[in-house]
Each structure stands twice: as structure tokens, then as C-alpha cells.
Length: 285
Ligand SMILES: Nc1nc2c(ncn2[C@@H]2O[C@H](COP(=O)(O)OP(=O)(O)OP(=O)(O)O)[C@@H](O)[C@H]2O)c(=O)[nH]1
Ligand SMILES: [Mg+2]
Image 1 (tube, rainbow, N blue to C red):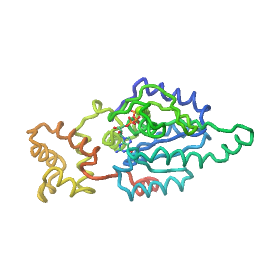
Image 2 (image 1 turned 120 degrees about the horizontal axis):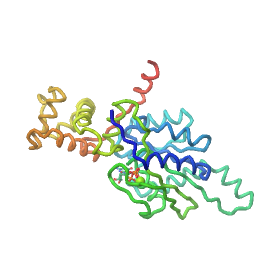
Image 3 (image 1 turned 30 degrees about the vertical axis):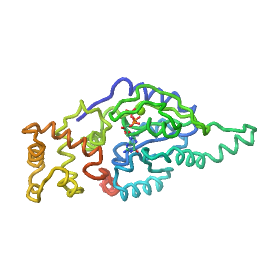
């Protein structure tokens, strides 16, 4: 079981609780590659009855059909839900439009009361590395918040202002204190939500291989020059084979890290680790 709950995360949860009354809407970011595993149950509790917008990030890296299934699932649960690719320059405008639609009544009300412009305040929350700061930079159209391709870049809260009457609060990523199970932890680690130094790369690498050989076998074979016979090997032997092919001798931990990084960059194809049908099966049990 992976455990990682640095002090700044406990503080982030406290600050979220303190600031919730200041905002009009909560942006709840989840990773489109594992939307279920990256939902933090604390967000619903703390948000209470504030409007929430569920944003599936990194949809460019996820399986598009499964992303659509997740959007339908969340909408059926009563969420406003959208999928985004923050690498696209149009994403900021899109979010602004969606938010104004969602809060149209509130904006009208403010105008009736004589305020000519209603400033909309939003707080952006989600697991580490899900793309909070990148999205906010897209909305404000400048690099106001620090971003980085590793978990735990944003350490404190920061208000950002867009020209479009939006005030946005960037927050550090939060994970709940103990991940429910190893599968969720593996999915979060593979997608990059957990700092790389605190999990065993071979556990996550084997988890990734097990997934890719079933769902992205052509991409896996191409990436590591594997043949059909290799694909008959056990997960462990397949990892050893890839280690050898990469010229890493018997350093299977290093090879595992390579597989993890390749997966995150989309080099083993687009993928989604959580499916709506897994969830439905779980509920039936
Ligand atoms: N492909 C892709 N990459 C993205 C997207 N959004 C963010 N990223 C990348 O994901 C990494 C993390 O982005 P950040 O915005 O720093 O994530 P964060 O949620 O603020 O992370 P913390 O501050 O560590 O909690 C960066 O390398 C971004 O370029 C997206 O929609 N698609
Ligand atoms: Mg950040």
C-alpha cells in the first residue's frame, strides 16, 4: 500500500474548507485516463451545495470512446461534466463559456441588482499533476501559475484573474490520506498523480504491462519491438524481455520507469484505466 500525504496537502484541504464560501463554483478536475480513481471524496463533502463542474483533463491521452461513456455517466448522476485538452488554446474560452452558462441565473440576478459585471470566483481542485495550473493559465492566457510534469508542483493557493470577469483560485493537488486499494494506487501512480519516489516502479510497470498487453497490444509491440511469442510470456518475463531489448541488462526497475514515462507521454497509445462497466460491476457485488 502506497501512503503519501505531505503536510501541504493537509493544509490544502483546510484552506479549501476555509475558502469554499468565497467561490461561486468548484472546478473538480479528474484525469480522463482514470476518472473514477482520481475523484477525491473530500471534494464533494467540502463543496456541499456549491455548483460543481467536473472536468476530465488530458482527454487527448485517453481513449475517446471511454471518455464519452464517463461524460454520460457523470451527467446521468447530475453533474455538469466536460472533457478538455489543455494543450489546445481554445480550452480557456470553452471553459469560460461553460461556466457562464452554468451560472447564468446568478449573473442575471447580479445585473438586476445593479452590478454591471459579476465577477465569478472559481476554485480549482484535484489530485496532483491532473492539470489544474495548466488549465488556469489557459483561462487567464498567461503563465501565471507554475506548472510541471510531476506531482506536487503547486504548494500554496494563488488567485489568478482573467480578463473575462473570472477569478480563479489555484490549489495544490490533494490525495486522500490512504488510497482505498492497490489498484487505485497503481492507476494514480501510472497517470502521474503520485510522486515517483514513493512507489515501486516495478509494481506499477508490471501493472502497466498487464493492462497494455490486453488493451494496446499493437502499440506495446511496436514500442518495444516485441513479437507474438514475446506476448505469450508472463508479465514478469515480458518485463525482463523489454528490459533486455532496451539494453538495460537486468535493471528492470529502470525499464519499468521507462514504460511508465512512455505511457504518460502517450507513446503506448491512448488509454483509459477506469471503465464505467467496472464501476457498475463493483456496485452490483
Ligand atoms: N497531454 C496533456 N497534458 C496536460 C494537460 N493538462 C496538463 N498537462 C500536463 O500535465 C502536467 C501537470 O500539469 P500542472 O498544471 O502542473 O498540474 P497540477 O494539477 O497543477 O499539478 P500540482 O500543482 O502538482 O498538483 C504538465 O506537464 C502539463 O503540461 C492536457 O490536457 N493534456
Ligand atoms: Mg499546480
